[in-house]
Image 1 (cartoon, rainbow, N blue to C red):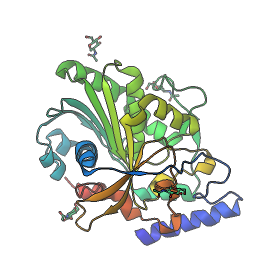
Image 2 (image 1 turned 180 degrees about the vertical axis):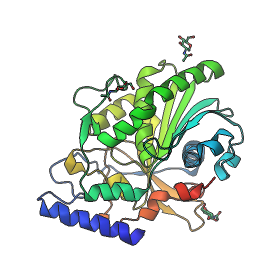
Image 3 (image 1 turned 90 degrees about the horizontal axis):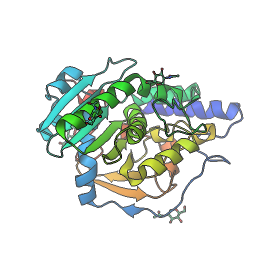
Image 4 (image 1 turned 180 degrees about the horizontal axis):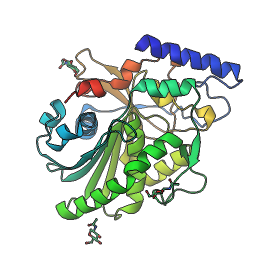
Length: 318
Ligand SMILES: *[C@@H]1O[C@H](CO)[C@@H](O)[C@H](O)[C@H]1NC(C)=O
Ligand SMILES: *[C@@H]1O[C@H](CO)[C@@H](O)[C@H](O)[C@H]1NC(C)=O
Ligand SMILES: *[C@@H]1O[C@H](CO)[C@@H](O)[C@H](O)[C@H]1NC(C)=O
Ligand SMILES: *[C@@H]1O[C@H](CO)[C@@H](O)[C@H](O)[C@H]1NC(C)=O
């Protein structure tokens, strides 16, 4: 797996060189970067803010039937007091997703399943990264300059109306005043678009938080700036060591990450304890923005993130 992914990436590098564009991990002339100093994320911060969304993101890899009954193995066992409102997905055009009431936190949770990292990397091989205008019905706050990855925008659009209406009715019926939007990989991309949608459509008194894992680049500089201005530090994207997925689509094709990256720099052999840095600015070169693609590890895309939480279909066969 690791080897074939490396071959794919190297193939892409050669292809990129042949079409005279800079190799995708080199930021020549396009895309702003930050080299601001990082600060350590405390274990308390990890426990309080980053573990719970990771449990929900892992659960999104389980079948809708398992999620509906909240019998999805380790994630469901770790969060016993969750009432699922809707679960769906078809393992095809609509990846798995669910909307639930986290009763202990009195929060409405939206979680989206991801896809195999090979898909991103083989897309890269074909340079299949076209951009579309944001759909302003879904994202009324997006200006005309916001461009998004077509596949991510289309995937989000397939569940957008259901997510919005279910979250609205769940807020009404439970009295919850907060929403968490989470996901891993493709699910992270969809979750970040959902977060902007919900932020602009829900009552401003609702506290919206989005924590995503292994996020690919979703849109252009105007998209990254929109996420920063609307969500600020209520958005966090967690990257694990040498995961190549946060480096695609490349900056030279006008893709840019928003701020608020938390970068895992090491995980102990048990997978339980991660060391992580808070990375100021967009595309911080001390975090995944500085990774060398030659060291890429697809295994790192799956995790483990925190508390030995790994995310992929193989980690939930229920
Ligand atoms: C961050 O990057 C800058 C520029 O590359 C470097 O001078 C600095 O030492 C780095 N900081 C950390 C904490 O690694
Ligand atoms: C934009 O989103 C709305 C609401 O989900 C949908 O009905 C419409 O078809 C979308 N437009 C495009 C161009 O995808
Ligand atoms: C939620 O409640 C508000 C105010 O009570 C109402 O305007 C809105 O239509 C309700 N939304 C849903 C989806 O039930
Ligand atoms: C960590 O998670 C993996 C995958 O779910 C599992 O196989 C392994 O036994 C776990 N390790 C520990 C120490 O619990």
